[in-house]
Length: 282
Image 1 (cartoon, rainbow, N blue to C red):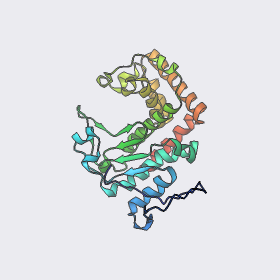
Image 2 (tube, rainbow, N blue to C red):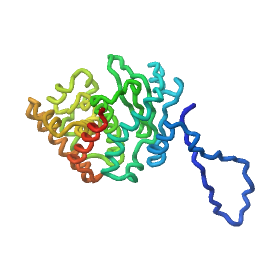
Image 3 (cartoon, rainbow, N blue to C red):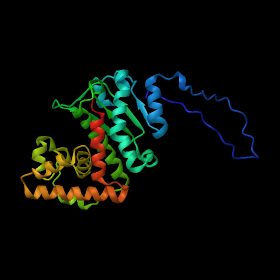
């Protein structure tokens, strides 16, 4: 990408061969001048780049966006929105995971690039997309210019981040294949139902019915971003007994997967994420 923030770190070169003269180099490595950074760039460097090796892009041209996004005439975020927004994301996602698995583990799996977009990304049906991910490497977050610390907004962005990160986790360690057998009738027509209809079919959200992998990460992210009381109400209010049992089976597999493979107690983690969402709201 062009015209993006790039922090160039000083490199050290080690000479491994004593008997071979490699000659001199004309390459000049520019020095990194922290003081020359803007306050926004300093925040990104201190809170994202140094501890987690994450590049945050907020300055970009239309041609830097993906082909699909270029059609939507998206715009970069206002710089005044960048630090407040990133601070919120850090509280509800990075800090909560760091407390559970440690900074070293999180650094190994965290997406290495976050692209911020100021405008909403409208879909053909009039709905908006708040976040997308590309292969576990990049996360794109939209509507930054409209962010104003409302709890519903924070909960929604927390859901996006935990949804996408759950994909990275299961791509590294697969979840129990029995999960896919609980409600095998996944459909590409998931957009024709709402979440209530989906729950009566055994899916926590309509999108969860699209494929098993989305089903799994929706279970993770919806659970983490709702209070235990709200989470249980979602399931207990389901009229279809078989669907309710299916949701509980999925819940059990998710809890076991997170505990066995990542050492995460989902109930404890859920409370931490919900508390972070509440604390981030103004």
